Image (tube, rainbow, N blue to C red; front, side, top):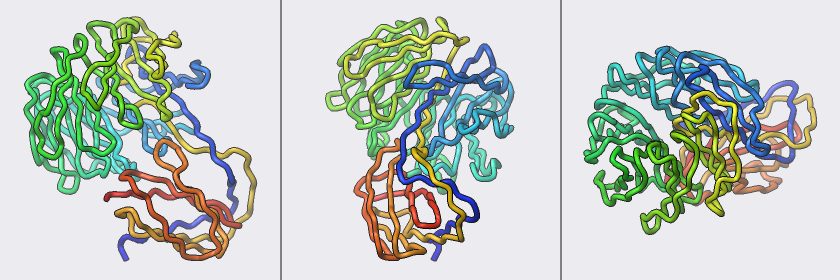
Length: 403
């Protein structure tokens, strides 16, 4: 059965019966050719990682284990291992790579190259390019639909957004939006696409019809964009007015405007939605916004022309209280995968604990079973991580829900 997969855990395992969420922000220093690592609990720089020449775009893998950085003047992307905070590999993608985005299941990385205008598709398991897709002029922001079936590319110089079919790796649609788009973000259900455009507005696009459904006026030269985990608000950086616009996604209106430091570009929101981090290019700082009060709660210094264009906050589940076991092989089968919500886990033993988290590390299901077959259900589309703890250790696997 092609939807089944098997995971074998061998020899010495370090396992945990509890999980905690680790959070770090990876800020691109274009001027230093490096990435600064911020502990988002203490708001301090804890590490600096050398990368390629003139880094700009960034995307964190859904499981938080890797960070992909585009090096604009180096024809490469750097892949950072978040457990060691070192570059594990460098991939040559072509001239002037800019935007980058990892697919929800973590299997693909999409990189927009400016010269020539190309979307490069990389297999994350092998780090090999599997496709190059000709796109419209001036690719900037990239995002992938929650079910992984579509990639959206903002094309600055052609004032369009390309829609890529990920099964055929071809353009299925090109959306004219009458304005130069930069960043992109999708609603949690994938039904709306938000695109800041050059003349001080955000276009709202209905992804079912691929048409512009609304326009929201914001500040000058909007660039970066990030959505709250619950989809209720969007935060947009305005380079020209040194501010962040907060948009209510129910009414499509600006509910607040927050002054930050000089020339804000990149923005990401923490998984609990409590804080937004903004990279200020000219001032060399990162502003931290309390999303409850919509006020700047902290300003972190020590950066050099930070961009951090893309999703730069790494969230991953890590052990909290560990035990060591010498284990035998443990075979686990989960099917179907992808699933419409209902799935079955075949277990190697008759006593197991199952924990399911989303890509933000939030626990969705935790249950114990004495059966070798367990049926579970998830109600929302997305990528999930399943942790199965047995007497032999712990196994982890991704599951995709596409209802």
